[in-house]
Image 1 (cartoon, one colour):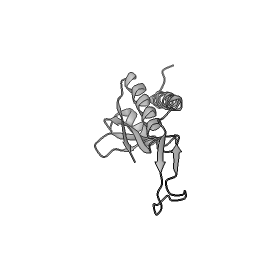
Image 2 (cartoon, one colour):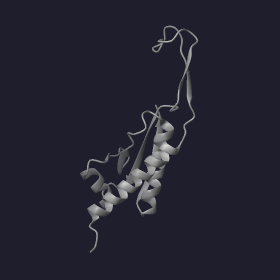
Image 3 (tube, one colour):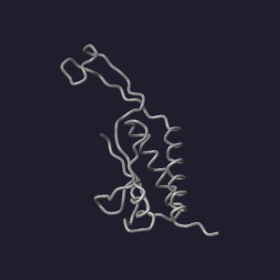
Image 4 (cartoon, one colour):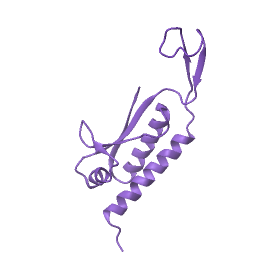
Length: 129
């Protein structure tokens, strides 16, 4: 019995998401050290005190799927998994991994790679906060 597109797209999305999540959890970000000063917005610590953010730098990542009128892009939007992207196509926001830029980026890159292997035009975008 042939698989309908909804089931096919659901499997592809879940595989990409799961593989991206696993890759991100396996990645160890470079910790970020923050030095506080008196009068700063984060002066909960005494002057000259340092603290480490184990998840590293803060940032964002997403997966872009183009074109926006493709069957997969339409399915993503209909399922509430993607939004219209400003420069065309749709984007899947990576909201996992707290604020860790590196983990979000790894997740998005792996997810885009899985989509590409299935013949979907996809790429990852990321930026620091």
